Image 1 (cartoon, protein in one colour):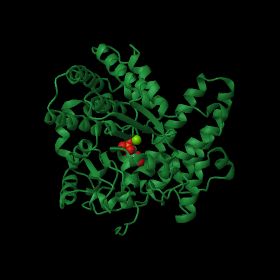
Image 2: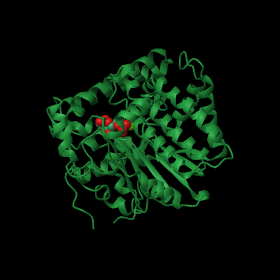
Image 3: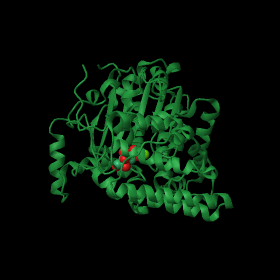
Image 4: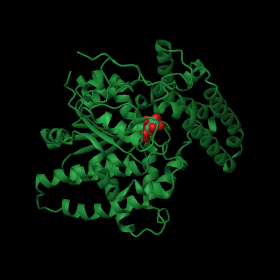
Length: 458
Ligand code: F6P
Ligand code: MG
């Protein structure tokens, strides 16, 4: 039996992070987008330059619409002809709307905003393949040299050990697995949509093993043992791990470190990364970002003054080797940037890619779902009491036959799976530290949840 679903978070809930996001963070993100269009236009060919005017006007209109709480308009037929799956957003508005920008549901309007931005850029032929967030993504990766080099050095040492003929005791592999999962989890703390104004020091303080060790006590629920048991329960040849990726840059790099460990240690035989098909939530990974990552890792001038050049080369060459062998792959789907919750990863959702992914995940050993936005879509971004079991909060996905491990640093209000009393304790703590709204501890990025479902829990 499915539990009754609580209401959504709305942009006019003054206690929600959605309130400040819609009023303060979105305008900054859109103004930065205008800035990046201008930067690109200044160095571009004449057609691109002349078309940039329409893009800038459209982004400025969008900004005004948001700031004046205008209506969230349906996409036109012309828009849908250009990008067919925008229909998904119209379906949602027809079913549950109409909405206005500052009063509408947070998750829906946020996804919609990124789709309008993407559409307005793609409408201009010369800009259709341009990623408005690419400069930001690459620059932040550049600023991550501290954590990147530490991990590369560690990997070189470890892989020597993993590739010897001596069998590594399972207990040790398990500890390493936990460590790499932990690295991939906290890799999510470097998020451009939150760190838009961060300094180099801010970014570095969130990366590296010392930062992770301090953060260990901030993992509020941890189902890692269940994921480990699941991994070992499947014969090696069939063991495939899928990642529903979140951010490019440092987080992507930590996902690759976990991938290398899983393949080198022969814990799994295949890894597949699921990417976004378009620029999304500022930092999210697209398939083309992999090529750029390879390029930047190999470029001797990218990390200035690097003392780990050999280790960086070794890391990137190891991944490329697995890519060539077909043991590591990247794919994408329109489903991830649609308006549907991941509850629709089901056989019935045949319009927007849900059924296709559902089928593909049936024989995945483990689907690692990364980050905050993906977690909001897993839980429907609803006002669950935070001690609600994860299997309830993911609704019918709990019975979809997909083994999911969510690795999420908490950067929004929704949360599930906490021990009884934990939310109340953290609310008090957050208030005692001088914050007005205790519940916003959950949007600070300081805490995390690691939650598992076997997909057979309905
Ligand atoms: O904090 C809110 C937010 O902008 C969300 O919209 C989104 O969930 C998140 O930040 C992005 O974080 P992540 O990259 O971890 O999904
Ligand atoms: Mg993201």
